[in-house]
Image 1 (cartoon, one colour):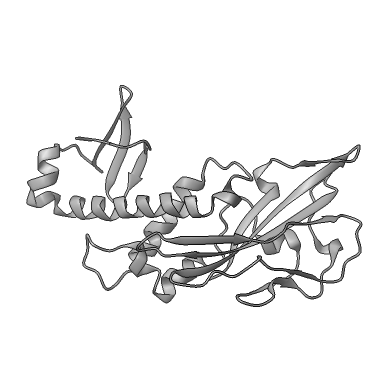
Image 2 (cartoon, one colour):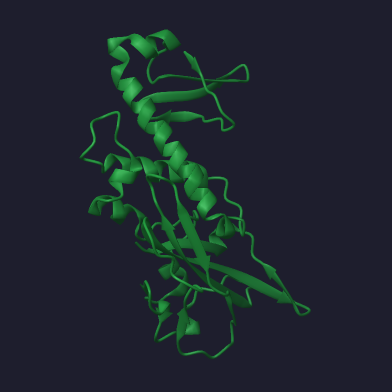
Length: 248
């Protein structure tokens, strides 16, 4: 067996490795059986395990920096499952890397493929419903243009939860370099609409669209409020908050 190192303690099986706690100590072993740290480093039979662990470590590092890049949105809500889901997402994107040899595949190469981009496009970062389901109508996102838009908006189509009186929408444009972890994250002003407000169209853009290297990602954040005595209170349930990648 080998010991997990670092601030983040993982439990579960990923990439043929089993992460677990024994007597409070975080350990890792090959799924289906135990092994020693020496065997991991040298045994020919552990070559696949070494490859998996190397690639998994790269995915974990990517998740760390990716979350840091989006922190201004992530701090608006709490989601205890996001980290694990992002690890799964980055692992799938890494698996799209068909150029690198096994053990050296990485997210930065995988995201350059159409399959890798497709995994990011439309990804819902929150564990609840999709943006289109909540809004009840189609939308579009144009980079370096109008941004997020619904030209024929209908408030009646929005699936307001019971007790909600207001809807908030905010957009962001991010560039993230999956190989170097360089990033830029620009938001726009939030738009808050009353449930009974009459509005025929929506157009929201960040204050700028970051240029330079890296994957361009458009994001939309949505949440509901209940107004009581002139004060708006945000709904905290996960199913009433949506953060989705609407452009890649």
